[in-house]
Image 1: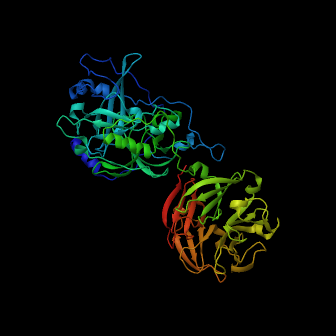
Image 2: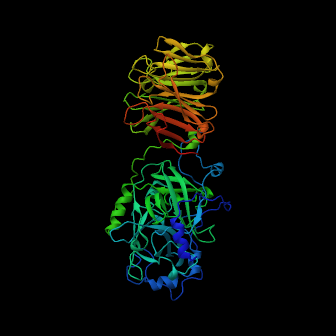
Image 3: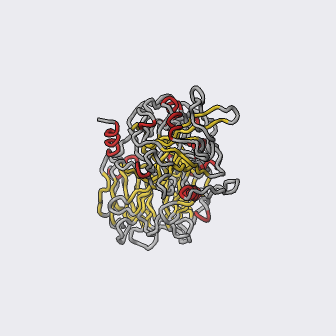
Length: 621
């Protein structure tokens, strides 16, 4: 089989999962090195910065003479060497950064493959004005849609110099024998405020476009290899496939791809992703939200770049950054399409950062969840009790997301001693209340916690009461009122009770739904919501073996009809905490929030007899 046939076959295959290979010991992404043996007398002439073709001296013949196989092999990523500083992150043990050595143990590894037609390598050389020494650089880039069929996207720190773009670069061939040719970059487009390889917010602007000359046969790159579509980065959390060409730890000099998950880079208008094997040379490489492997194109929502040149932080290869593709990105894209060089002042005003709920390392410490409309605006909110006793309120946006968080209680012993809690309308105020059961057996209603906080409240039971045996509680509308004033209790001996009309005067009326039994001792998690639209709410139970059951139309007369939602030994055995509430625009309490054992937190919107569409709120650690 020829190389071209093998490449065509590789593109027609579906995306593979990364192979399990043992990476080389982590080292910094290399800094620029001088090209071997200096500049030959027959090398290209003209300026090494600005518009590469400004005086017409940089030709295909020049590129072929200069870019010998040895020089292409020696080119390195222009990102700076690793430095020890790291991005700002929330302080405290619970909010510790997840980039410790253990974080690399369970993550994807970049898989070598023959490449994608529209993605390739940039080879560029520049001259250091202080030493007059040449530096040979290598980055990754992708052809993107443009009216002239002649634009590539890469990182801002890759722009400048005399450069050629080689789509689907094949190291086995010389420059003149590449499967899809090569294209000189005549003009670079970068935001004038960008500063190379910084660890400051201005690194949010680490993106660039290159305008390509036609090939020697007169064809534009997009007409030969196709072009990908550029989309706004929709959120911090995205599933992407990173593609690029590492220049180190890659003896074959082949492309790599890595399907992975993005999350926020705290304090920056950037996202980050974990994948082993993303060494220097992948700078500028695209992050696809969708790839057509047969056509060799897709939808791009990010590119390697940003903080510290897009990676290389703390001497690891597995943490990679990308700027958010927002307003400034698309302004530059328009300028590149129109062949305009515009100035946008001298300082960078960082846009308001999209809200992030944090990462899986943080959320693995979320011990209890309670849904409710705590702020009184009709939008579902979430209260979290953390393992250190801190309590926070996450305000909902009414569209299945959250807009911010507020501390209700500092870390401490009081809330460490909470066994179970639930949100409901027990006191008749403007916002939801909390009903809290302490390990000691004390029970309190905390009215309108969104405005009044979580201190004080109304005591319903003293310490030492039978309520120390209330292992699981959940509030709901179980057929006795229009408000969430009923309380379902699973006791330590397996008994199940329904308390109707619970309020500030007491627990209302108790209805025994099940006598003590061994089966319900295994009801590990219990919550309630209106999943079927009937008169009464449903009870949702995750059993200790991973099975999930829904009991429809729970009420004083019984738990209702049981419907199995997940079998035993399912992934739901990793469900650590869950709560149901009304979080999206339909205003119905049918949205299920789940915190998994690895810290990933998901919302299953519009859950019915089966689980609704899953949306990730927090990426796993």
